[in-house]
Image (cartoon, rainbow, N blue to C red; front, side):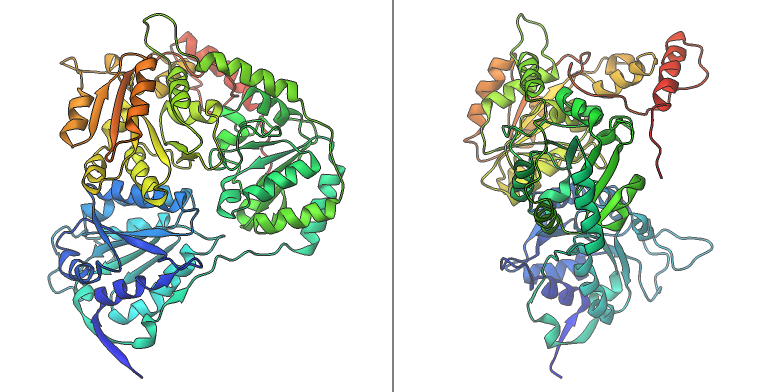
Length: 608
């Protein structure tokens, strides 16, 4: 047997560089790295020698560089991914939040945190977490609940089994998610005679599982028995590359559809059967259909509580769920009739079974009325008052085209964009599984790296900007251009409205309602400019539109700041969301909201 003598770290990077997609690209596009004593000597040296075939990028924060990797994977339709490496201790635990983001959103990322010495000679090494009752524990065990696959590389030959398992998970459409390979720092530097065959290029295919014939026949029968079916388009449609298939299915059988946060952008908003979004951030016309649907056909969705209005929006008596999903866990949620299958395959087979079955026209007039109503919400404001978030969204929409992609993650923007943004196909990216503040700027960079031909627009509030902004400097260094529309409402406006909506007094959300000795005014323009970005403040939505046009030709990120009014919500659509209101309070407002809360919880369908 021919062997190659390499350190474990060298072997890992050499192996990763030859794991290929069906399209002939590396599956792991490159490695984000912040070096420390736990990875600089081993992994760092290995990456130096492989940088021509496996690029290395330097981040500013372990969590946010991982967010860039997550956004890249999502924008690549889970067909490609990135790796992220850190030292042990705080470098590793900084990535745990990002691992949770990837886990909730079922996205492939390879986390390679440094770990303690496998030989334990220097115990306790710098930054080592010691468990008084378990000598095998390190800080990296925090990754276990937020990883789809976890392994600790404490011997060089562990890579022979651990690396293929890692790739299997990241390319499995059902179990896709983050992988953590905690890499003991002395093991990184240890040599081993690896089989030469281990480094031969390998192509990884994304499976398309066929449905069980019994489940397929039951699904066809359920649809034929329905009077008012509604399709719920989830992110699984996009990951299965089934967007055109779903539209063809809907048109052939005349079934209207709505899109979840993860599914939004699967179908162009101008399609007549597209009724917007459901649930808490639902369109008026979409929620009206949801309320009367006797069969909800979920395709690639996990039925998150925003989508279902905390299980109150699909409220027709006797209504049923049909869940088409790649994973049985999601397919059987809430007593749904399951069809475990790839979405593209399932839609074709169901359509064949339905034959010429067509349903009555949905209420197209209600759809037209909805868009006419929201035209007014998105229009430029009159007078000199601060614009609402909806009016800012309107300005961005007028300044962008079909090649634009709008993205966000937390605060006001996810809800406002879901209900109001009119997404072209492929023009929407929302991290709303974990809704992680601080994802936005790093995520925009990751999207642009995955889709360089898109005009990427990052919509972010001042709260999220303050949470994590350092990868703006990275995007400048790497010349990755995108536009950041930064809305400053002086605090956490979204949660301030939720607080008051539950009867609470404004407290600790807006800066003016927080304990502070000195008045705070942050010069966001100066801050962004100090990191090298193009930065300007605009005084109106008209100026915003003009600045957006200028930003399209930039070769580095552009930050456009606009002050907004924190008080108004979107002013349209939506339904109830289960946020528990205290049973006991001195405030009459809270007691009144508790009464409303009890009425709404009585409407919930708990299922199983």
